[in-house]
Amino acid sequence: MTLDIAQNLSKVKNAIRAAAEAAGRPADAVRLVAVSKTHPPETITPAIDAGQRLFGENRVQEAEAKWPKLKEANPDCRLHLIGPLQSNKAAIAVQLFDAIETVDRPKLAKALARHMEQTGLRPDCLIQVNTGEEPQKAGVSPADADKFIAACRDEYGLPLIGLMCIPPANEEPSMHFALLCEIAQRNGLAELSMGMSADYEIAAAFGATLVRVGTAIFGAREDYGHSSE
Image (tube, rainbow, N blue to C red; front, side, top):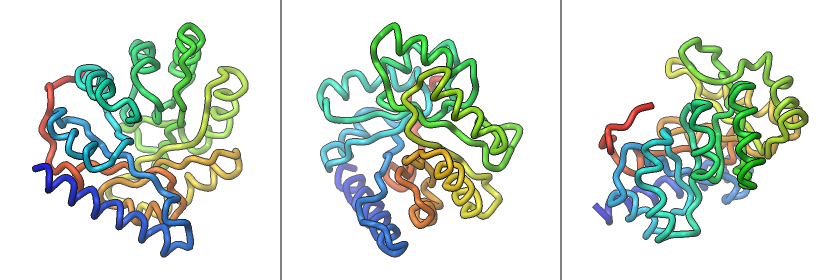
């Protein structure tokens, strides 16, 4: 398994570099967030051993169960929250994650700001934009994005660095990546977290700085911990 994960990681990183270069971007313009959700520490460790240092988790409860020990053993690893965050888990998230990619509503922004002030910890924040305006999906609507970005900066004082999106599964992703890039540019935000296992090469061509890939590295989900929120 160690060899397979290392090989998969290498393939994904090579493909990301190639996609960036094909789009006329530097080979290192796009960073890989290895999505370790549902996978146990013994599956994640081979990726760390192969040099991966940036990981993504969907659930606070699951990350809390496995990442403190992993980070203790590998203090240079960084962890991003890439799944929906309940306001009542904001305190844990601020302490556990180096970046929170799913800020999407005022209540959550207020909670994060409060806990950052209390703890002195300031994980990077990205706003999730629901580019497809899907009712079942989290994220601020594109029409409300500019106003919410301004509030996160000026009213809540969050350390805002970029935007994140998850395009509709049945639509061409490029139009959604282009929309997210446009919103980011007009608001002076540098980071774009977009692209997953099926479309990260397209995302790299459309300006992604972070791509979130799990299955192509770790294989099928293992439902680690069976946690839910």
